[in-house]
Length: 124
Image (cartoon, rainbow, N blue to C red; front, side):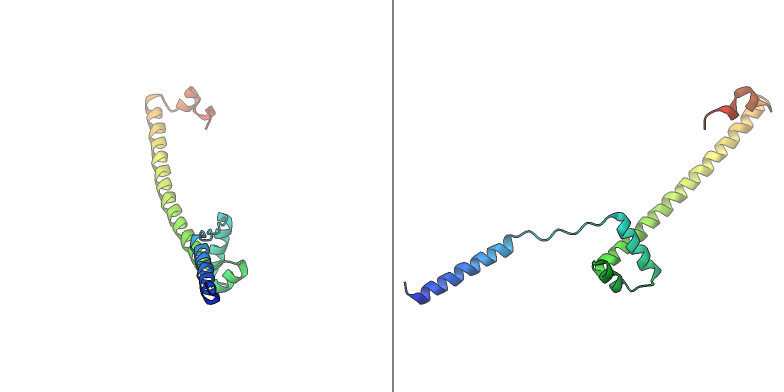
């Protein structure tokens, strides 16, 4: 083989090895952030006192991450508000049940039913 053929074969071999190394390497792992950090970023972004791009630069994250943290925070807040409404409805229902119970006890046991049953002394 002449020298030119060896150079071409060497270049092809080097290119193939380089291509293999690039293609076989795993993609970089997405950086994980603590929830408290993401919430802090989202709240600061929602306050609007600093541009999202500047916030991203300051915190060494991308502007897309700032936006994602903010969207996740708003979705969580909305879900919390829904569950809070459901909880408040349930509490209202339980308060009505307690009122019914107290009226029924007074009707069947007497007005001093709390003393007779030790109702005030029970563990709550």
